[in-house]
Image: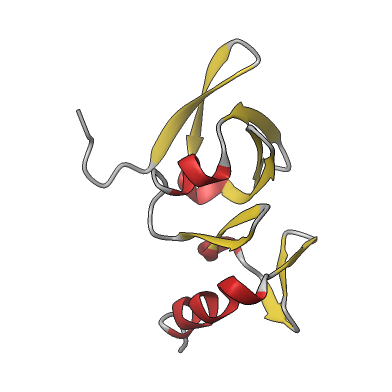
Length: 110
């Protein structure tokens, strides 16, 4: 069953299911077979899934910007010199992902 226009997902972390709203996720960092999900409330969740698997199930506002990072485009504060700033976190944007990111950001320009 797929809920159309779903705004949240559950993840299993620390033996419990935690509900995460997509809008609250800022950065997802890859740690091998695990990911660290960072949120607007500065909480971090460790989840057993690879970035590659995760990006396929996330909504369109999420974009991979580096081999180790997925960001929520709606929570980016700034982008300059191949670096994104997302809630005091600086994230390097890899060359291979840069054009795609710029294209996405251009669609959101005023």
